[in-house]
Image (cartoon, rainbow, N blue to C red; front, side, top):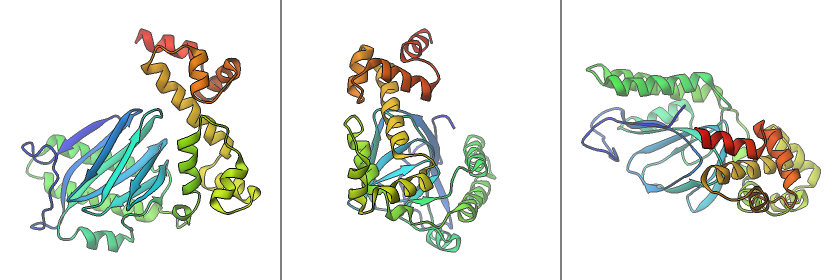
Length: 274
């Protein structure tokens, strides 16, 4: 979904309220599809985030995690959180809700708060989010009933799709390390040591949970960083290659083309003509 934002009350731009007078109130809803943003907040309502593309570090409860494709998170009210993306494309859906039955609905659906959960990529959930956004644009006398009904369907869809794994307990430390150090040489032995497992076990776990090898994941982080630099600076290709961890500009170009489909030079020219 493309970046969009909708609020229940036009005179309350932040929609940051706790309303216990009704069963469920959807304060605001939207989507983010960008490669540069920063958020730091403490909300009075619940915050739901569902990542459908990319990954990013996110901090809450005094810890830093990585939330990636197919992950979703529901933060409790008054939770301090922060996250940012400076050089990687991330597409996620978000929703804020409140109401005296909010906690009960989450319990009924078996959904945890302040815990990253994994449900995979769900076309159904994305469609429901689009329907919710559509209701916010209509905003007629049926809006409240319709938005609450869609919200219940979203919770049910998450509950049905959730995969009960220990992903939130493993690999998070090494993923944070990757996001902070991807321009440097990162050895699998280092990542495995961070998680307290053998190299072979680490490779197997990574492939199981992310569908690719650690090296492929690191390469994607480097290339998405290069995409951002190409789009937002006039740096030469040699400089960009060095900034994202490649000493050989030709090898950098080869990896860029493998992932993006065209050379970095051609990518920049296409962007300049738009």
